[in-house]
Length: 215
Image (cartoon, rainbow, N blue to C red):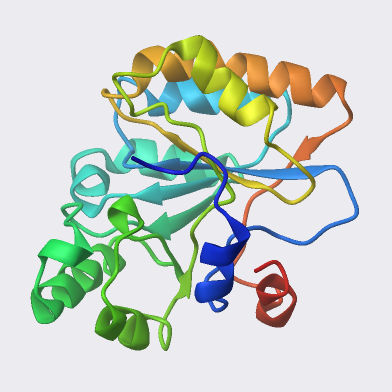
C-alpha cells in the first residue's frame, strides 16, 4: 500500500525532508529512480530532450558502475543526479552501519548532496545521521509505474490528477517500470507542456530553508 499523493500529515512529520518545491510558477520536478540502465535511461533522455525538460536521476551505484557512459550522458544533457544507495537496500530492514556504508559506496560514484532512500524507508537514527550530510528528497506524487497491479492508464491519471506547482514526481528508469513508463512519460510531457508547465531539475544549490516551507 502506498500514497499516490503524499498526505500533508506525513510531510509535517518530517519537515526536514524535501517533499515539493514551493512555487507560484508552473514548474514540475520529474525524478527517475533506480537507473541508469541501457534498456530505459537513454530513451528517457530522448523524451526529455524533445520538450527541453530537465530532471533529476536518483542513481543506484551498481548501475552507475555497470553503465558509466549512460551516467555521463545523463549529466551531459544537463540533468542532475542524486544518491539512491549502491545496492538499493531497504533502510527499515538494514542495520545502520551497513546502510551508511552502502550510501557512501554510491557517493564515490555519484557526487551529490541529494539522497533518496529506496522505498522511502528510513529509521530514526538513519535520518539523524543522513540529514547532517545530505538533503533527503522524497516526493509529492508517486506515479506507481513500479506497481504490477496498476494499469498504465491509472498510472497516467495518478500524475495528471494530482500534479500542482512545485510537485516532485517519481518515475523509475527500470525494467520493472518500463512498460508503464513508455506509455506515461511522453503523455505527461506533452499534456503538462500544453498546460504551460515547464520541467526543471532539483539542484544542490536550492535554498534549503525555502524547500522546507513545502512540508
